[in-house]
Image (cartoon, rainbow, N blue to C red):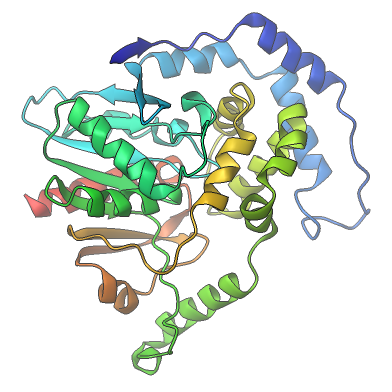
Length: 362
């Protein structure tokens, strides 16, 4: 059963948030720390003060409620999603999947342009935001992909595309493997290309690709602290992030600085709206569990055609010859603007590339 959903946070929850923010216990900081030890206190104070005194949740709640939202139960789990149909009844359906520490908020600025050509389905990953916490072990990217296949079938879509970055990239590729006869193509704005274990073919790469591979090797060898914690101790982490709004804010806001193009103009309000979906739903721990549950033994297979949009300031940049060993890459774009949150940072470039990939497939 699919049920309409409207976001309406009780005022008591907002009052509790304001009280907690006013009682924040701030940590010390070395006078010359800057970003060497993590996100600086001055930046978190700035965001927290705006959150407490200037940010208007009701305005952003209303923005989310402009779009039709629904919930349904799949595999014992609540799934929340936006469903925005195109004026063209024959438009292709497209499922857009966010990542961590993102949410459906990532796609708000591309709903308008993309809904001109696509029926859009924008789910909240189980364990994230408005889908609420997961209740069982085993919610990895493959299980999420199976849930997406069920959702699209339940909505009556028998032919559709998939798009994603971060976890959305893995889920979209897994969806292509789960429903290869229904997924016409998979567009990605983040694609890990791990180095081949035997080093085969590295000598044939161009110098720019060798530079990308060197960065990937460094990332794999020195996994970031957030990833290690979420993959090993998500429950321990959850106590701090669920109890302290500033803790949750710092955990997420750090990534919105480190992983974006320095020239990007993602507003503080957008960041705070994204943080709110974690805070209000208490999904800090359950969203982190996805990292623990999803252990990869190698590249995820994906039979349908794949399109890749590379944004210059992403965490790592994919190496095309390595990607083509696993995927049928029919579209590859390189942009000198944008980073990990491309739909938020450069919605014009993002939407145009998605449209072009699926147009070329038709």
